Length: 230
Image 1: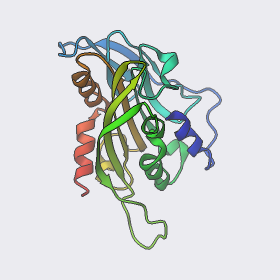
Image 2: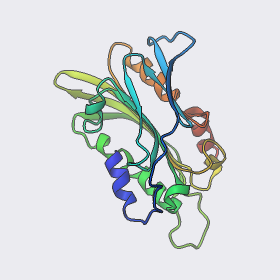
Image 3: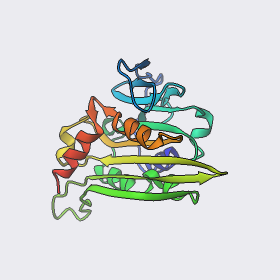
């Protein structure tokens, strides 16, 4: 997923980064209330928040390496990036259009296509649900106005070596629609992807997907804003 996004980003020229990147404020603390799936911790990485099981490790995405801002967490951080859908973990990030200065059409295309390609194309994984909340293709001719927004979610199951994991994701490109009025004003793309396993995996997956927030805007609020564009 990260490779797809950064590879697409290379087709446009980005402004030079500062010589010394500043890492966002990062913290992990237990929730003050009990959770049905088990003990959960809240991760804060700058203006991104999310929930993780207590046994997972979390780290911010390095500001000097990727245009994404957020965090990744997993009980096996070293295995997360190269094993889409089969290693437990969560990744929550956004892309700052003010830094990359790339037209919003780019973010629509990434959200619509390659953003989650590595997960969907994994032969060990089966998609069981896919829902599109907003889809307004950009008008590349310039003859009419388009919101150029796209919001979708999906979930499914992966099976490998006798082990089963559940996965889910939501991807949102705000474009120029109502979605621009919530969350992070300069965000061109939001992505949340999570993979879990165990007897309470369905409940845990729902809890941590819905627990992701961008500038204190929840996933439910992002979806609600997207639905208003239909």
